[in-house]
Image (cartoon, rainbow over all chains, first blue to last red; front, side, top):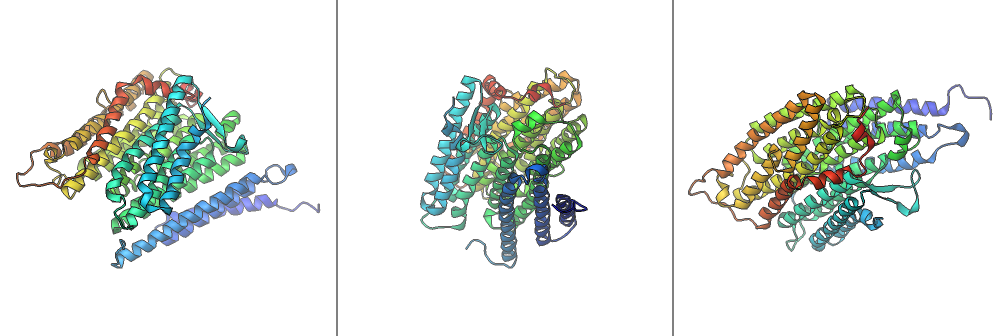
Length: 104
Length: 495
């Protein structure tokens, strides 16, 4: 091992995750359009996953804990499904607003 | 020893039927009814077994114990909620054959309803059987996404807008919950409830994690002031879907909230937190009731009534955990809250199904539309009145048992404010339910005609409303069941 880095890498990841969560929550809460909210949701989600992954390195002697990674993968699938549903609903709303029948 | 299949069937059967319904839309009704029937039988046997043996049941899937594997566990609370969900689910699906059954050609609504409803029921059952915070998250997401899609099912502009608003609240809720779960994992290295409870300690990070989870779950339970999505979503959805959305979906996030504070982190909720949750619940009772009083549409009255009735659930936190030492009234208050969740679910499902049948018969759900419908639909009107009895908390209904237990706890603990709220809530419920009842029982105009509806749309809500009343008549049985495997904290308080 070379010399210790000035800042531990898990701390960098953790802090980046926290910043992303903060930015995303701000983007979600401010008055804005639905599409921006969905994007903000994905930014918060990425931040949480980064934070979660960083917590996997709590005990340096045993290496990274694989459980958070397994949970993150599940979380990404869930976030993808939620995003897809949100986009589908937005498209349906746009179609209905344009006067086309949704009941075809 | 309970057979493992009893724990697997309530989740696996609806999921399997959902896949079948996608592949073979013609057989969707048969697959759905038989799967939920299987789930109902399994949960019934589970309740009887749990009552007989006095212990819960557990299953480590694939032989992998936690923390590596996923365990399914049923205590008395799980078994009761499972049975309620399967009963309501079966009733709703029987009625849904009418609007969504196979008509010889594939329609968008008829095709989508069955997989969505089945996924919703599977997700509910998965939550009721889980003992792990990540499992809860996955179940909660499956539940929310199916519920949002059900809201949008009508395809009308208002319905899609309501679904999007609901989805936004659900997304914030799940993000806050997931962040809390990640922090909890960082703290304890596990998300299993039993393992966390064994090593839980009161410190800042734990409280921040649990606080985030609580905020997220409160948004999903539509606790005041996070209720804004509920009325539009529950009225925008088709009536059979509203029945499940109002009766079952908010109970799942409440169930997780109970698991967080009473099972995983007993002794961690300070008086501040229980006071905040209790106050929000109390405001919800008053605010929801007043808004219900101002509505002109049957479905909106029922939806605002849900906002009010969900408030009672949160009185459990101050009543069953506002003291530093174990108090004799904690058990009663906790059980009262759980009985309320079950009896409200049954009564609310009955009411929404009645509203749906009456809408179909009258062509609208304004109070003036359904005026005098008792002559045409005496059974549905009777079912509505019975469900109203439970919501008002009149004896001998399940709602009475719940409110009686909460009142006793409130006065025993000297926190008479909560007791006053419970009493005022019952009075307000009588007020806002008087208007629809008066309209239903009023003499109709002689030339007013109603369309005929199938008899089952009247019989099912009647059966559900009767079960809600029976819950109070046979009060000892649900009370005893709920005590099985009840966490120590439910007895000893939250601090």
